[in-house]
Amino acid sequence: MSTVERSGETRADRKEPAYLRIAEELREQIASGQLDPNDPLPPERDLCVDHNVSRMTARRALTVLESEGLIYRSATRGTFVSEPRVQLRLGSFSQEISRAGKQPGAQLIWSETQSATTGVARALGIATDADVYALQRLRSSNGEPLALETTYYPSDLVPGFLDGDLSGSLWTEIRGRFGVVVARTTARLEVIALDTTLAEQLGARPASSGLLLTRRTFTADGRCMEYAQDVYRADRVSLVIDRAVDE
Image (cartoon, rainbow, N blue to C red; front, side, top):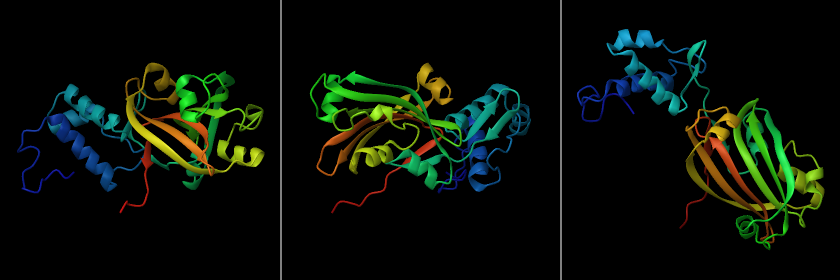
C-alpha cells in the first residue's frame, strides 16, 4: 500500500503511529527493489535519528517487518532483507521445490507402524485400530527448513512401505513400488501459532505464525491413500491455489 492514499491523505496526516510509518517506508523500499534480498537494513540508531523516534519505536517497526517475513535478524551481524517467500502449490513438496530451481530435502524424524486413532481412521476411511504407517519428516529447500510433515498411510495398501526410500517424494515412491497413482487431493488451511517445539524444529521464533495444511489424497477409485498434517513457516512459504471458477 502506498504512503499516499487515494484521497491524498498521508499516513502522517492521519497521525498513524510512527513505528507503522517507518515499517511502511522500509516495506516499500523492499517491494520496489531499492533493498534486495540479504541487503542490510539501517541500524536501529540510524532509524532513530532519521525519523526522530526512540530506540523502542525503531525496534517495534523492525519487529513488524520480521513478523511479516520481510526481514531477518542476526544477533551479531544486524538486520537483513529476507529472500522472497517460496511459492508452493498443493501437491508434491519435492516436485514444487524442484520446479522452483531449488534442492528439496527430507529429514526423517521418526517412522513407525501404529494403530489408527479415531481421527486417522475417519480420515483414511478405515477401521479404528487398523494398522497404519506413520512418519514425520522435516522438509527443506536448499537446506532451509520450511515444513514439518506428519503423514499416515493404510498398511494394506502399501505393505512394507516404511522399509523403502523415505528421503524424497513419497508419492513417487508409492507409485513406483506399489503402482498406486494419485488422482486428487483435498486440503484445509489454518493459521496457527508455532509452539516452542515446532518453532525450534523449523528454525522460527516461538509464537510466530505457521500454516497448518491438513491433506487427504485419493486414488482414481476414490480410496484415501494418504492423510497428512503439514506445518509450514508462514514467514517463508506462500501456498498458491489455482483452480477453475465454478459456473
